[in-house]
Image (cartoon, rainbow, N blue to C red; front, side, top):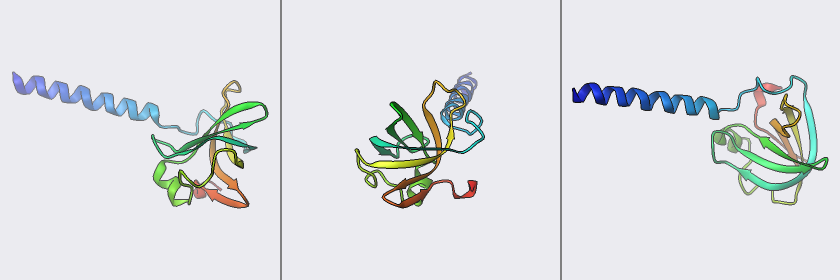
Length: 124
């Protein structure tokens, strides 16, 4: 009886972890197909926490969430938490959220001081 209970509990735990991981992953389906570019000021520096690295910029009078590649891939592109300071101007290129009320960009490239950080080089 104990082993049946333990097996059931492990199955439930595995399913909940899988569901949470799938929910947390930012795919491309919720974004526009056309390329979107935006220049703004960094208000929250690059964070490598979570399933995807991210930063936040202010542009066009809005606060924009900039979703990057997974942390390891973002770091391999040379973009680390201390690379771009708050207050710096950056240009991001990627795909805007299909929901126009969401100011979020799934970003492929970030340009800062003339240097290009290509976090998704396979999407060119």
